[in-house]
Figure (cartoon, rainbow, N blue to C red):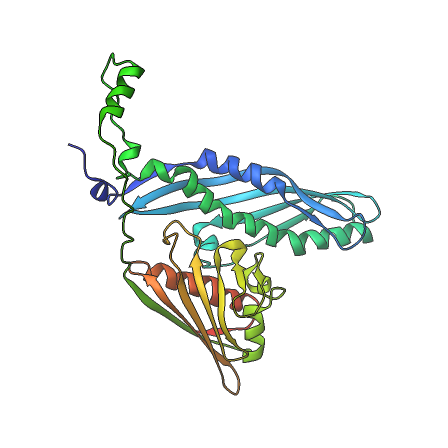
Length: 331
């Protein structure tokens, strides 16, 4: 007897996708190219020499979990401003769920230069070290999403009847099957009412060694946001304007902005665990004292059951992000 979908999806299941993951890194990382400020300067990832580690997708209690920890070795190359072809190596000791999603630590990069140094070569080497990490980390952020999109259906048992249709009886011709189907009375399918979503509020506080004005800018200025998110951002700090953080991982609109004091914005996480049509409201309050500023992140509308995950995300992405640029924090 088959278990109902709600029961079957509750049990622990794992799928090893190491080979697929290595191929994904080999394909996606080699698309990265950065142009320098000097004419003719460009640097790119031209080869993935090794991906060492295991990659799995797990499911427990109806939630899909990415499980991976890889050491990635790359070859980078480029053209210096004087036309010199430059090559080097790059090793990233850990690309993992804990770093990419939980932000428990920063990525580490070990660089090597195989071309003989010169002023132009050294300039390109500096370009590689300063700009390639942001592009790589944007790709790393896409990896768990691609992993779930590609393999999640293999672990989740659907309750949708359209995915388990009943085959026609053996020997039945297409015409007979079509006739049988059309002989049944048809009725318009009524739209299913939207299910009520139970939500709660998640609040996280931290003290930063920075002024409220500086923190307000770091949270809203499109040019400054990537300093702590290490990913592309879109932001026009105006009421009604859309914003996008962490390479599209969080999206929403500004509801109200009080400089140096408060930011209210709609907030939606682009994640398989977050309801696709649901939007929460993030209120960020800045309280400046003589030597630090307390920042209070209050996210209202968090679906019940996701409280721990969202709290870890705020602590990992926002608070750890500020800490990574030297502001210092005290939770």
